Image 1 (cartoon, rainbow, N blue to C red):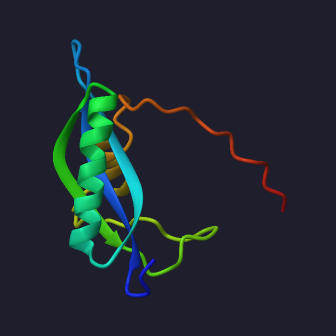
Image 2 (image 1 turned 90 degrees about the horizontal axis):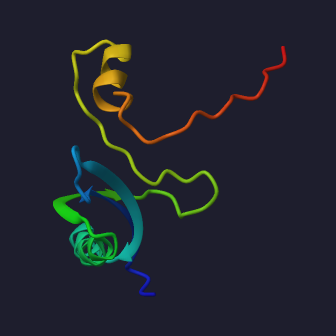
Length: 113
């Protein structure tokens, strides 16, 4: 790869096969590119292919993050800052824990004093 290239992560949003209610998917992919614009171009090309593979629709939302670290164990892959006047619990419920997510709980390990 060209030494002028850097690592970028790109978050894309998809609508999957619709029934009574649609399922939306957010994907974060990793790209080596010479600019954020090139990373988005690469990600959107892949997003179109992915949408076709899963019979979904790419919704045209691509958010790029220029990584400051190399992609190693613990490297930050994506960050999005959002201003809000909501209290923490209300913010989490509004954006991340509405009850409609397809996710499971992970039990936290016991903490020792």
